[in-house]
Length: 260
Image 1: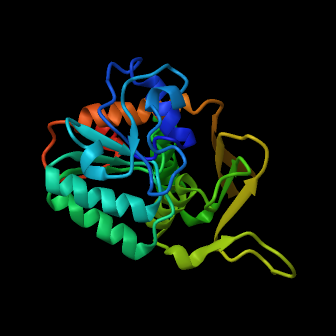
Image 2 (image 1 turned 30 degrees about the vertical axis):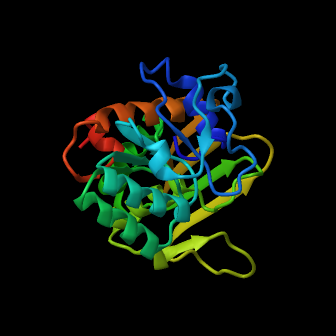
């Protein structure tokens, strides 16, 4: 588990037995105050005899797959270590730049690599439904994406919202240049080729995402609300189990869930 002391890392470790898996190693960044501590104790499930370390090669020993919820810089370093040891990597980290994403995807030539901004089964159904709706409705319907997260979240829009926007862009034949991140002032009439994006932050919200398709005389709203991080953890563990034994390549949760 990479990012073992973070919110998602601790949750994933606490859910491992429920998923029928066991922790092989725990990784954190250099200088972390949690280095040397027992990963199970950090996750609140009792000591597992696995200490949190900063060296990827140490954490990867005996691992079939690695789950990463850390930072883009740490993820790229980890991907290099996974490629050297032939270990599959599940990436839930978000906030990559275009170049970082390209660099990360290049490791798919050497290892099975699964990248998803959200591991929840329900959210991946949301992705699927959004693509269906955008394909059928087209640009005659105005598309807007809203997301709400806890006050500690560092990136905006969320990785899940970015994925939803990308889906709409693809189906509408638009690009990221057509996305309006919030609105202020005298914006005038809404352009027909605009996609709206709105990020709200506060409290302890695990994650809410809504896609609006607004037409003349009707609107469609597709919403996913997460009330527990366990749903993301179980999805990530399911992905890690599925990735074990796969050939090198780039995968998504669609592959894991058979949504194709």
